Length: 634
Image: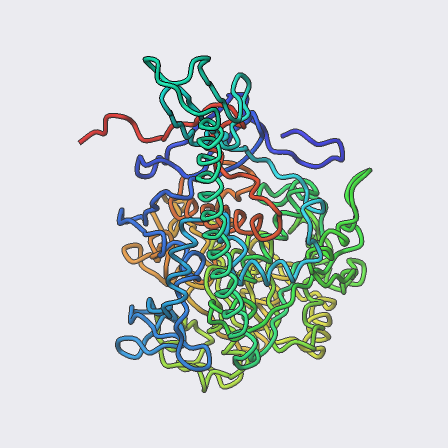
């Protein structure tokens, strides 16, 4: 692994001019491709993706509201949408058996459908008409292409213009639009020295009139095309204004959620962390874009919750390396609220000897990562959600927020379904009336000898409280942690992260205050695409979840993509590493990330920077063939 001059980790680059990777899981082409000539990553955005069962997942299923927002415009009152009735679904609608998934109605007003059809014929015009792009652009301080770091891309080859030719008894005229390539003129006029043929003469003004006639045809066609484009633009703007007007006229947001991104390290050794300022900027922008897409600010998401992005920096992580940028400024330009905070408990202040001696070894950054606890002090918000750079929001997580805002008593019936509401030893059979935290468990920390687990910090909604913050700091400063039994010698540890925020919150909400937490299905609300089994010391196979039998291990990799609300890419190769993913679901996550990146570029930049989607090696370069072989095997 090389460094970039500032001591930052840079992933290895491949020396082959171009490589195409095939998925080993099913023998199908992977969507991710790396082109070392231009050091760029790209996605085959038209590919069909598969679940582990081998069933095709459609474009609409993969993206949900990401690609159907223009046609999905019919809602019930108060922003509710009918569900499709699939089991274990979510949303505000009433599907079969009272279960809805919050899908959009396929029916819309005629004007919007006609505008959509027109926009498909003119994709270059469509990019300005999406309310997601308009509102995202408004939420950023970056408004011009000059403020955006250059992103690797390929330019498309120039499309040859049609040549119009006319011939009048030996007089010919040809017009070639904008064709100004070498050796060709815009227009050519060839007139013989003798007018007419076989002694027949024409008036001297004949070629002039012919020229004027052809000029009139060209100007007329251009005017018609220009009028057609103006009409399409007008329809698109009318649609965008209508959708934004609907946003203004609908009910105000139910609450505002603060998404908190802790930044406590300078390009850590974790392979999935950003490795320089550019990837730091891109990852932070894409995190915000995925949240913005599924929030109140995008009307067609159907979400009732607005959002704010908050970044909490440790002082040591503000500027990284000699010549590094002030990273707080990078995030401020992206619309983040930035705070700089020290860790709430110094290492020397911990009274417990074991915790004081071993906590720094539980994470490369030691107790710096305790700055996450400062999220509890954001009491201006009804809900605070911890996230990180591997978080990808695929659907509105309103169900999780509703539990905190409304309480368990007012939750829809389907939220009590055992397939969604996970009941552990400390949980009651019903949802608690007051919910202070909604979490999923992280089973990737399980080892053959230790089956204890903690909360997943990649997406963790909680209720902010100064009192809870003070209590957590007091517990940590006391340091009652043992090597074999973890916190208070009650079995909350050891596991990776158990001596830091992950273990502290696991102990607090399961041991100290066990009546205000809700654990949800990790495959739906924080899918890591992780392996469900491991081989233990005696050679046998065991579920990572010790409460499950081997035959019924929950495999989140086989869950339908359309049922996933939040993805956690920490077990996948994140997009900015340009590394191959062998898990099909990880490929789908990566595909959505790159699709969203393309939309973000279209929303912010004045021109699409990569119109060929990297299927051309450069302007005037080589065409990249399909990965599909010419002779398909039967």
